[in-house]
Image 1 (cartoon, rainbow, N blue to C red):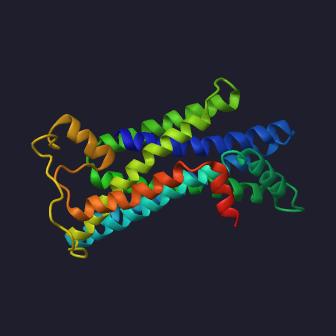
Image 2: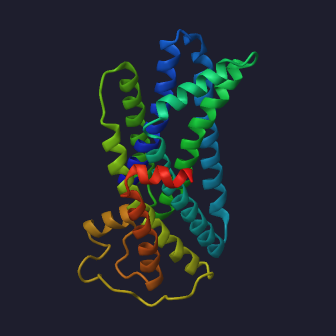
Image 3: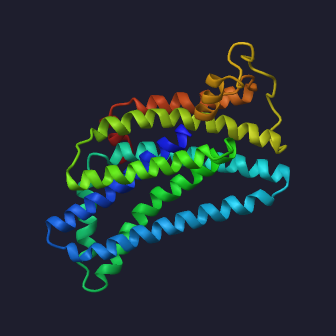
Length: 275
């Protein structure tokens, strides 16, 4: 429940921050009459993401066992890529996101015709990006943890994100967004490492990966997944009490380079990306 809550809180807050920045800029520049176009973009993006998530979740249950495992592995890989991209994209644009959004709004509304459609599409694409990221992560999370807790956590995170977005817009609160995104990003990288290891496990169960399947270690007598702590670690970080060598290897192969890049100074990353 906690991981879907945190992901939806973060993704929802990113989307809410984008919408609140656009709304504040429209209001500040005397263009509040464009609010309907902005909200239309938000609602269309939300409806598309919900429909896509529902369709994928309902149709994949009919797959045979091996195809189901293959699909779960592919979704986990997509979720790892999206989560990693999300972490480093937000780090790269966090300082200039306000200016970039305001410039995009001006560009959309300065068109000679169809300004409403241009603004609608701009907001739609911005919100849909956050929503589609959430869809693929939640699909991976729901496949690993069945029951009502993950959807409940996701809904609670989304509600909290919307409330925070409203309070940010009205100036009711001041959040240290830099610290929030930094620490949630670090946690998300740990979650992504667990998903990467889970993808290898799913590919093995699908019959596609049969190498290095010896048990790396067995913590069943120290921290079994049947205990509360083991269950929490399994649900949050993908912990396995007796993982294979390939699962442990993938976990480290993903996490170590990701952490090295994450802790590099922001200026170093900016210089590297502009070359």
